[in-house]
Length: 118
Image 1 (spheres, helix red, strand yellow):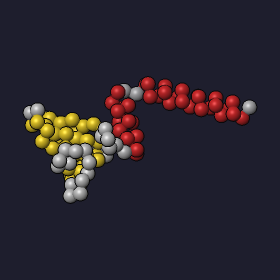
Image 2 (cartoon, helix red, strand yellow):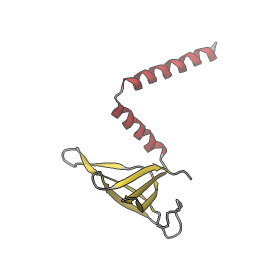
Image 3 (cartoon, one colour):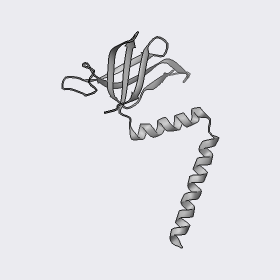
Image 4 (cartoon, one colour):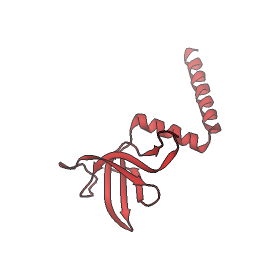
C-alpha cells in the first residue's frame, strides 16, 4: 500500500510539472533549461570563423552569457564567457593553454557553440 501511494504521488508530481512546463513559452523553457545547465555545467566548445576558416577555438566553457545593460537590464549585442584557448585545435587543454575571458559580437562574429564531443 505504501509503495502504491508513493508511486501515485510521484506520477501526480510529474504530471503537474509537465503541465506547467507545457504552459510556458519557448523563451521561458529556454531560460529554465539554461538554469539547469548552470547547475550541472556544460563542457562547451566555441569555434570562431573568418569566412570558412577556423581562427579560434575555446574549450571547457560552462556557459555563454548575453550581456545586459547595468541601468536598463536590456540585452546587449554581444556574448561573453570564460574558456581555455585551444591554440592547436585538438579539443584538449594542453599544458600552456590558459583559461581566458572572451567576447563575441552577435552581429559580426561567425561562431558555433556546441558540447564537446570528447
